[in-house]
Image 1 (cartoon, helix red, strand yellow):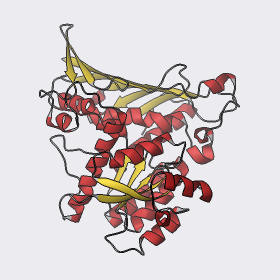
Image 2: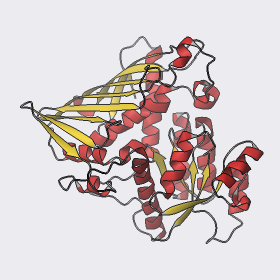
Image 3: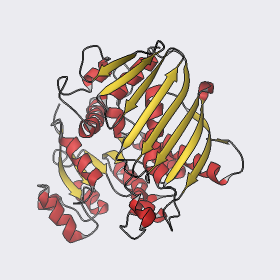
Image 4: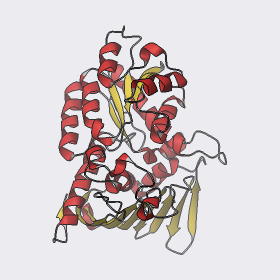
Length: 384
C-alpha cells in the first residue's frame, strides 16, 4: 500500500499523548506526519514543528488555516488524514471540520464532551462517509484480542461477573497541596463535565465492552472529589448491570497514591476466569476451575489469529503501549485504503473488529452522563 500522509493537531513539547500519536502513526512505516498545528501560540507552534522535521510551509497556526491551505494543494500532495490530540472541549468542532472538508480523522478519546456532541459527529461522519477512529489504545494489545477470542469461543462458559479498575496517582500530590501544579483536566470548561471518569473511566468501560461484547444497561455510581477546590470527580466507583443479567464493578481513580497506569480487568465465567494487567500486558491468565492457571504469552503460535497479527516481535521481545497504539493506527490506515478501493471500509479479522470508532465514542459519553446523573440521584439504578 502507498504510504499515507497525515497531519496532527497537538503533539506539543510537553504532550505525552501527542507524542504517542505522532510516533504510533509512523511506527510501521505505513504513514508519515507532514503537517500540523503544535501549539495555540504561533512561535511555539513553529518551533515545535521544526523540531519534528515538518517543513515550515506545512506548519499551521490553527486548524482552519490547515484545512484551507491543505485543500489548495494537489491531491497527491495534501494530507489524507488528521490526528486530533487536543484538550477535550476542542474535539467535536475539529473532528466535524476535518470530516466535512474531506479528511479522515483519528481522534484521542473522549470523542467529545457530551453525548449530544458525539451524536452530531455521527451525523457528519454518516454524511461524509469518511473514516473516523477513536484511540482507545488498549484494545490494540495482543492479549486483549486473545481475551476476546477466549470469551467468544466459550472457554469461560457463561459469564457471571466482571471487575475492572483503572488507578493512577498523578493527581494525588494535589490533595495536600492544591497549588503544586495546574492541569486542564480539572477545568470543566476544557475537560468537560467529568475529570477521571471521562479521562480513564471510559477506557475501563471500553476494555470490558471490547473483550466481552456486553452492553451496560444500568449504573449505580458514587463519585467524589478529594482535591480541595476541585469541582470534578477525581475518584469513583460504579456498579454495572449488563445485558444478559451480568453484573460488574468499575473503579477509576487519579488520586491513588503511588499508582502509575494500573488498568486491570478480571472476568469470571462458570468454567474459567481471565485476568489481565495493562502494566504487565504480555501475559494473560486464564484461571481454571480446578485451581490451575493457563498462561498465554504474546507472540506464541497457540494464540488466536487476531492476537498473533497484533504481535510484531518474536516471543520474549517485549512490546508495549506504543505498539498497541500503532495497531489501532494500522487498522485505521487499512480502512482508508479499503475505502479508496471501494471495499468494505472497516476490514476485520476473525473477531470482526479492528479499531474503536464513533459508536464506542457514543457509548463512553452515554456511560459518563448516566453515572453523573446517578451520582446526583437518590435512586439506586439509572438507565443508560
